[in-house]
Amino acid sequence: MLNATRTRGLLVLLLGLFCGHFSWGWFQNNAKSKSPQKEPVYEETSDSQDQSCLCHLTGVLDDCFCDIESIDVFNNFKIYPHIRKLTERDFFRYYKVNLKRPCPFWPDDGHCSIKDCHVEPCPESKVPVGIKSGNYNKFSQAANSASDMRECEQAHELGAINSTLSNQSKEAFADWAHHDDAQDHFCGLDDEMSPDAEYVDLLLNPERYTGYKGPSAWRVWNSIYEENCFKPRSVYRPLNPLAPSRGDDDGEGFYNWLEGLCLEKRVFYRLISGLHSSINIHLCAEYLLDEGWGKSVWGPNVHEFRQRFDPAETKGEGTRRLKNLYFLYLIELRALSKVAPYFERSFINLYTGNTQEDSTTKELLLQILNDTKAFPMHFDESSMFAGHKMESKTLKEEFRLHFKNISRIMDCVGCSKCRLWGTLQTQGLGTALRILFSEKEIKNLPENSPSKGFQLTRQEIVALLNGFARLSTSIKELHNFRMLLKDHRDCRTGSSRTLPLDHISNLLL
Image 1 (cartoon, rainbow, N blue to C red):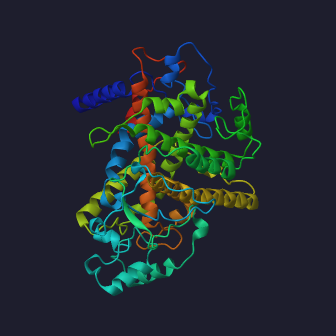
Image 2 (cartoon, rainbow, N blue to C red):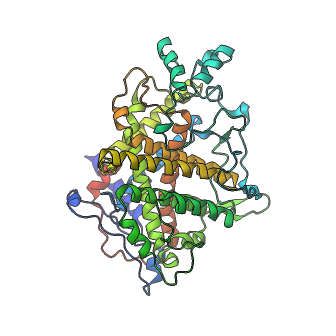
Image 3 (cartoon, rainbow, N blue to C red):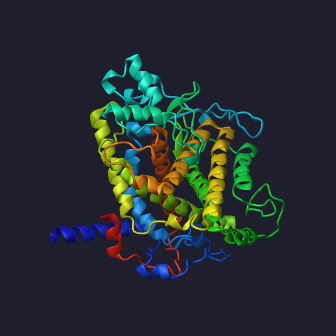
């Protein structure tokens, strides 16, 4: 009884600290019988403080049955602390990437010369032996022999599989390495074996604002939106600096067009917008505030954040951008919950060569995956590509190719650090989409042996979890910006609902 009282008291305290200046809402069980609320359109008011604290970022998301407040509580208290620890483990901190590939779409306009754009590759001596001996979790004690190294190279598609398997399974690995499964991928398979590919320690090369901006950066995002989001050129995105002047156009023409699209194409745009918003939050949260005497000071830049997201600064567009971030979070959260059976099998080992490290890493990963499965309001991907069989197949292929094209555009980013994190997060989302549409293959995985139907490379696993960690960080940083923006007055929440304590308990316990 005493423990229960303490637990309840702790939850009340946490809720008070977390909510601060606004109340939380919860989507009731009967919400599925109601139509999703439309996104609010910002209107000028005399109380600018209400706008600067982002009170309009609340309520139910379109195209799914989940509310923002529930995601905030679930992520900030339950997921974020664990996913942050996971990405600090050796298996997830080293990412192999080729940052020297030329841009395939337009002539290279030069690389960013700002020092913060630079990526420092990881010396071979610093990479754990189980990773650098091919990434393939083969014979840890005999990794130095030439024959075993050749076997590692042959099995390069099997990044997360431990080598303590039968000879028959090992032979199957080599066979599968030659299997071209590109049709299942939403991103181009990275050329890890290229001599230009190098390991990068993600902890030593954090995603920050580097100063990379202007025409080069805008060309990349404009190409993504204009050429790959199923949009006709006659429809202009709100606040697009490259579009002709539209006077007082508030973007309603664009959103009227968007609402007329099928669910799949609407989802595609929201995913890209959500990714763009997440990256922008990272750059605002890790901004160079002061170079000092040889020691740089990084931290949140409130002015930069308001320029990108404040409803008063963006004619309400910032609210929509942030809602798309939450939508993307739900998509990747759903993918993690669905891929759990892949990792729950006993022979799957996140191998680095350090037995204790590997065991701890897998335990932490399974804890996170179990948490994702317990979330009560997942996105329902079964509603996508559910129409006429041939039409759905064509649409899915078009969807996949558009996203694959975006992954190639990342080779056109002039800032090496921006390119590193853009590539990783794009590959993470591509892996999540592949998981969502591989439900049958994952359900049919054999318990004690690998399956040819579905497998993940180490590169995909590292990108998937780090990409989701970036989204989790974005939502946590968004809360931090809310706290920084608040005034002495509480911001008015209108029709916001109070989050019942019992529902908080279900999310946190």
